[in-house]
Image (cartoon, rainbow over the protein chains, first blue to last red):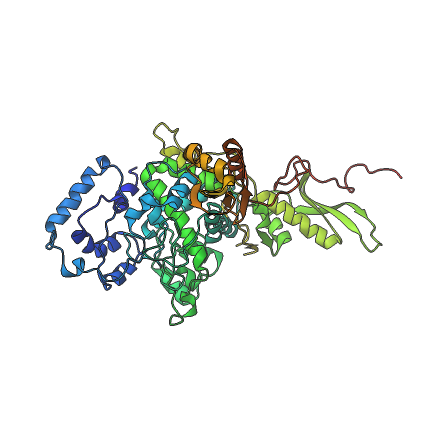
Length: 433
Length: 137
């Protein structure tokens, strides 16, 4: 099978510097090549032109081919080499610091060293990862592209780890666990644990080592998860597909969120002219999370797939999330009965194992749930019924949280000398949907 | 839909997975004329560049503070600061203090009287009076 060449698709992130005249005429083509994350490119075109030199550059050798393409592109440019009048006349300050200032920022160098990033990742790329689309709308100078790459890599590794490690998780729990590891709140905490400070307001004069975002300006929310069905928009409009199977089918979001606001490809922050659903709830968390995703994207683009996987493992998948605390059951006894019927176990029976103080103010009953001679679960409660329900919940959690231990994940087979993939066990699905 | 999911955020522990040095910035203040800064001035001349090279993860800011005692202030990821006055100290003593600031987590100093602190559940479990054979009274 032919592999997807992500490095080809996202090649513009590693672009060698080209002449400013060509760069100024290009944003529309850039916005076409990235999937819907930057619709502000057109917005930018209406603003006065500003000259800057892109300098997130890697070594020239692997980019020869791309550079030739760039040169071909330049040949076709009509106004190549001729600075336009708008070009020479720069009006107003830049929206974000000039990339050339990145090399002299102590904060940025310290952040690079603190994260133990490879020297292959240029300091300018890290500076670009710190510029939110709300601070600088130009897609070549903000982190939207890098964050998109980073979010897909992060979601891929998180989901494959969760599914192979806990093959029987119900979908709703799987979505929430994904959010607990890779959602905005978790990534916000990671960014804070990395010691990233944010600038009071974005601007040209700000230290490039500070996170720059503006809570009052339009930004980009990374909530896309691969292919989005055409029906998704319709189902959002008519409030259909809100059940779990609808969330699995129609949600464009890795966390199965299907509310009208969250399924929109782009959020815009506005001062009340838009409907309430278009307002971003937590702009700082979104900006911090986008920075973290952009760092993952930078690691992926400059150091490769394995380095990105290690980075994700050490910074995100090593965090602790107790999955047994995520469950809230409505009908545990019925669900356990259906489970036993589905798996051809003998019907579940609750038995009183021990009790104390039945006639006192504080009785305790210990109830075990048995299927034939096998004990499925046990719990204590202050009355017989709640003890039975708690025991059923324990039995169901024991089923759902089964883990085969350390198993290989699909991405292990990407290595050159990897063993062929052995299909992992994944449960057939919900017991009662 | 008999199972509803409760949203929780994963908890990170520094050093499990990746380690992030908690000291992010070290402010170093000196005075050109006062006698109490003599050790600090020679520390800046002799030790500081090597110390800064060994710790690229820390941002160093050296600035004069005339007619005041020399001081080192560490800024930490949790938002706290730790300041040490290094008046009349030898350069080697000041180096020790800089290492102290580097190694600190930024938290308030707490008494640790348990050998292990863990967020994991006990492996052995909690003793229950309702299991086993019970005790005859």
